[in-house]
Amino acid sequence: MNTQASLSDLIRQTVEAVRQEEEQGIESLYLPAGLDGALPLPERTRSARSGRPAQPAGAGRPAGYAQPAGAGRPAGARRADQANQPNQPVQSVQSAQSAQSAQVTSLEALYAKYHRCTACALGFTRKHFVFGTGNEHADVMFVGEAPGAQEDEQGQPFVGQAGKLLTRILNAIDFTRDEVYITNILKCRPPNNRDPMPEEVDACDAILKEQIRLVRPRLICALGRVAAQALLKENSSIRALRGRFHDYHGIKLLVTYHPSGLLRNAAYKRPTWEDVQMLRKEYDRIVQSDVQATPGAEVS
Ligand code: SF4
Image (tube, rainbow, N blue to C red):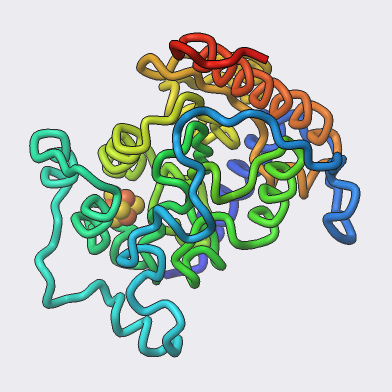
């Protein structure tokens, strides 16, 4: 790459970064010493769960994707795996979009179908296909943006600093990671954590739609602007989208800030706390109405 091209790239990336910060209302950067105090952590008080099974840790995660191929092996070996399996059949955009015509019936089968996907260019640079984790019958699904470096390394979503904060947020509203389902809009890491390109979001959309069809969540929480805009097909700012429920093909969808945004800016803590409390309240309301609709069930 010549010097002029590098400079142009740098300017373009800087302008994009400033635009995003402005859009999210960031006026100053906050660099926390740790995660302590990020959100209040009330005593866990178990409330009634819906009739859908809350599985123990690890349950509901087919072995095929609980431990992605190559995870735990030396980095060099993983790299060789990825080179995106040059001898394996390549999945095209067309095949990614034909998911609904050849419907799979389990998340394990969906993982098997797509874990070597190269429907967009990210399939050629990733270390791991990062599918999703949690309860395959979850009532609540969290959808983030895309894997970061640690997620790409480990093949699991939300395992870095932002992931630890997400775990604390879930605990704060009386959920564990194993009770919900967590995934991203994109299953492969964009280089240098840049924003997903529209064509990448489009190429990956069929996989997310299939995950939602199979998990059948009652509530979806979009984490951050990219996830919110991709799911709602809107260009509005996160500030305009958060704080109320939207309709996603008949499923209630709430938008809040991405945990990585909270790590950058303390001003996002309060609105995020309000959003996740709203999510929990709606979840409890759904559970209560399920109980009331069950013949012979005791209503407390
Ligand atoms: S980001 Fe999605 S569409 Fe692109 S290669 Fe990865 S799995 Fe396939």
